[in-house]
Length: 127
Image (cartoon, rainbow, N blue to C red; front, side, top):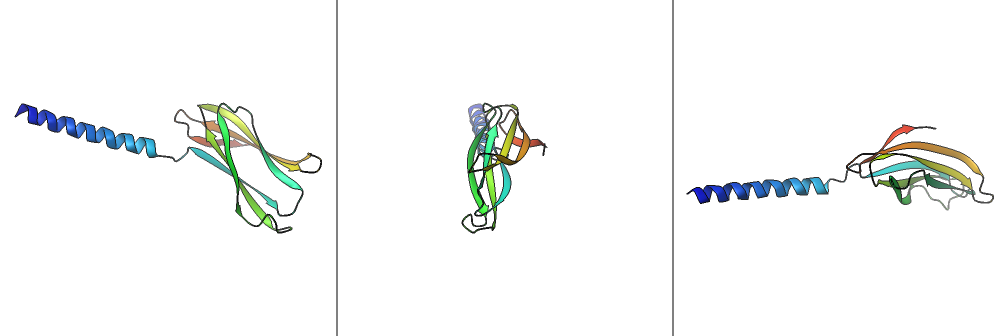
C-alpha cells in the first residue's frame, strides 16, 4: 500500500517537472530583437549594423518586410534581427551608408539590454 502511494507521488512529480521543463525551454519570447529601418528603392544607400560588444549580442539576419527594393523611389522597410548571448548592455548602431563613397548619411543608436535568461530588449533609443 505504501509503495503504491510512493509510486503515484513520484510519477506525479516527474510529470510536473517534465511539463515545467517543456514550458521553460520552449518559450522564445524576448530571445530576439528586431529593429526596423526604412529606405527607398533604387537609392545608392544601404543600412549597415555595428555592435559595440559582440559577446553580449549578435546579428542574426536582415530582411525586407515590405516594399520592393527594385522599384525606384518606392519605400522599403528593413528588419535587423539580433540575439542575446549573455547578460549585459551594449550599443547597436544602424548606419545609412552611401555605397559609392562609404559616407554615413544618418545613424541610429540603440542601447540594448540582455538579461540572465538571454532575453534581449531595447533599454534606450539614443537618436
